[in-house]
Amino acid sequence: MRSFFAAIVVLAAALPAAAQPWYARGEFNGWDTSTPMVDQGGGHYTATISGLFPSSPGAEIYNEFKVANADWSINMPGSNAKVATDANGEIHLHLYDQTSWSDGWSPNNARRVGYDDPQMYGWDLAGTFNGWQATPDPTYNLTSMGNGLYHGQFAMPAGDQSFKFRKQGDWTIAIGSDFGNTGADNSFKVWTAGDLWNFDLDLPNGRWRAYTDAPSPDLNNDNKVDARDYVIGRNNNWTTAGKNVWKANYGYGTAQDWYVRGSFNNFDSSTQMTNNGNGSYSAAVTGLTPGTDYTYRVTDIDSSVRVPAGNGNDGKVPADANGEIHFNFYPLQGNNWNDGWSPDTVSRVGYQDSQQYDWEIMGSFNGWTTPMALTDQGNGLHTGTFTFDAAGNYQFKFRKQGDWSTSIGDNFGNSAANITGLNVTSNTEAWTFELDLPHGKYRFYHPAPVGAGGAVPEPTSVALVLFGLTLGLGRVRRK
Image (tube, rainbow, N blue to C red; front, top):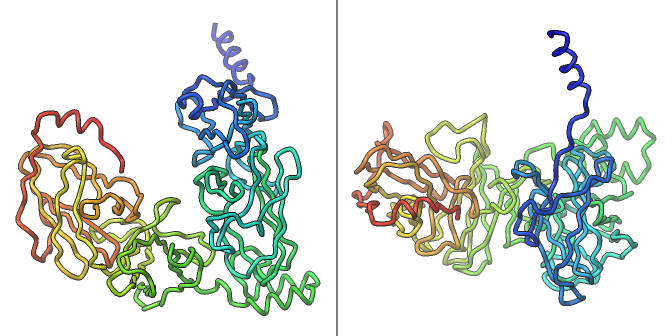
């Protein structure tokens, strides 16, 4: 009997692993599993969605979609993709089940999802090099090479550039770094003004690339131009052009520089922050429209580090009465801040209070319906102490008073996740909330932390025992 079971174990180990069942999930089927993908072999899966409204040029019918397994634990691309139906009312999808690629295309570290070209529109580029053009810009139109492949070659201005592939002249559909419609910007570095760059978009294979034959001074690809690159170039019979590019860019990236990028400068690197010492950087942006909101982020030179972190999590701040914004940046040293404030494990970005509005908190403790106003303590510090009439684990955000257009979530970004960890353990429990705008941090606590000082307003009762509260809490939303 023991030999029999041993044979079964050996046989089971010899059998190939079952292929992952993949599903095309999107607006066309309510994001369910009714459209399984067909295994074509070699890691290639396909699916055809038919019976949809057909598109025609200028009157396209769009559908957002992903490819995922049954429980959504694996899904791609990272942001939803978007495609128009073809003239027959069909969408033809492709999945390439491989997570590491070395073919020079991107994305190179994830499964790729593509689709047959619906041939309803052309494609162009929009990016820092043309001010993220909102209207058609024929200068950067791509040429159809057939079979869903689009190509363009363009002379580029020098500097750090970002871009997306876009439906020609229209932001309805764009392709970012993960091939999704709202993916992060694609980035590249132009060392010499006028360098020719090639751009390829391959729709059926779910991939893109940007490349140049122009010489690069960063020969060891470490994002620095230093003596190590000189040695590599010298030992490999450097061309005169290559050596001149190295000379012109020597020192690039050898010191950690930080830049404020935002809607006020087309997210380029024109606003470098000043190193004030002691782990503090600052920058002032002037000449803006007073009271107008601007989105922002702080990055290193090639945007490989981004604060607040994550695509779509940029901060948001209005210009003050003088049309200025004054930013502060505090790079994280070590693993965490360990000062009792959040965010705790990432660098922090703050700004001087523009004094354009006050702040409040909104949360699941009252179904996201009744704001609790904070008090302006001066110098950008806003505080409030509130009594909760029911125990529970709650989520919340800081919000511009009376308006969800500006809010602060867990990483201090405007579209960040809800702040969690508000664990009220008993009725009539008072918690204090503090929002420190200049230092890009917040905290909430009960009771007061050791050594805490400063005036705070008197507690305000929050009625949490209204009829229907349980229903409201059951529908906690992420703003």
